[in-house]
Length: 271
Image 1 (cartoon, rainbow, N blue to C red):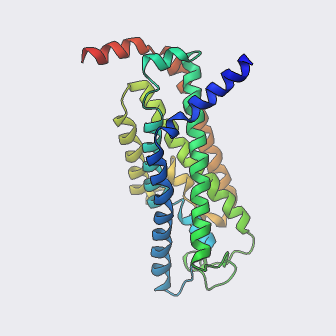
Image 2 (cartoon, one colour):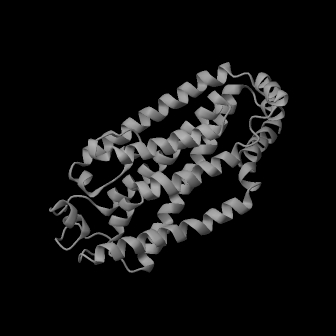
């Protein structure tokens, strides 16, 4: 019975930040369909000028590009994570945890659940909007497609299921990696603002250096049409980001073990 109560208390604490931010969650539920619809309509109108019909597969790739994943989704996700961990560093909350490393893993798990939920919801919005607008599922095997216009080749080997899975993986890794970096910088510096600056600066730097082949995070997850000519490279980049994410979590463990919350609290009180 005691074990059951302990587990129930854990899950209640796990999801309580979302329960405390119902309006924020509701805003997200309303915002992403509108953003997806806007992005899809803009893409359709742009490609229609050149006689290139847009399809569901094109839109699945589009949501991994800089404007959607590298800016809109990540900014909204970090704002959500910021609210979820807002009270996690107070002394009463820290005391209730088993240890500081457990608190770190607790926040990583919260980030993973939020990233998975947001990824699934984004994909659901893409499917709903694409079907609602009557887009074809996949047209990469014909010359009359946006894929052919950009690559000058047709693609008969890549299936819609593969594109869907890669798009989901790209979104999840992008959100999870940016959220983990945000948490790591918060633990290491006791500052929220630095995480925003570093992640947005990273996205801007990758965007600016795109022509030079510079890629660290968002550029590796951007599923452009040309990357589907060598799908093995996509899997390789996913592994690199996953390795980067693992290292960040391990560094977070080391930072958590050395964290002195009492000193931080005293410093904040003195200020």
